[in-house]
Image (cartoon, each protein chain N blue to C red):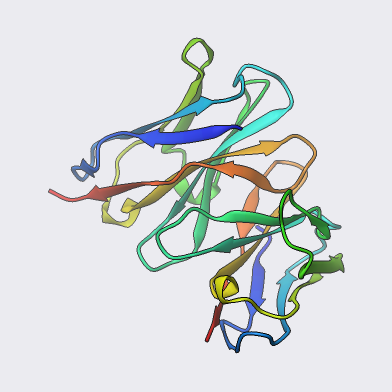
Length: 108
Length: 120
């Protein structure tokens, strides 16, 4: 099973700051990575798919890069609604198995 | 706009079977090119993938569930279902259904989630 390790677990920040979240895979996942945002009590929201492509209606302040085992999500100029949990996710080709990282909480 | 809605009992007894249904509206579940999944989140924890059903009807599951899970389509009713057998308290979670476009890594539509508690 491919393990995704997210760091840091908690990221204290302030509105207007820029933050970078990390997701590291235990083996190569090419660019088979997605990023999600989740507010408490809500379903996750897809932010990024295929490692770097913004999903529909996702603001440009969210960007992501990476390939192989190292991936980053950058949020530029944090807005109040950006304080939430963020998860990365991978899917292996065959057999199709999917895992999530443990998450990063971006908090004020 | 595609919408997904989970439904099912909120309380299941230990050793029994958890059954949930995801109703899909705004798009045909029988239309090829999509994968449908169940994902759960234990209280205060992160996301855990439960399993997939592909548009072909093939299913794939998290090995940690030890063959307790099954997923099926009901295309006439535009819904898909999860059965999880022999549940324990460790299966207590919010269960989400979600859709992924084939060849795209990422679930673009999610249900709001259904809390299932396993308790006697």
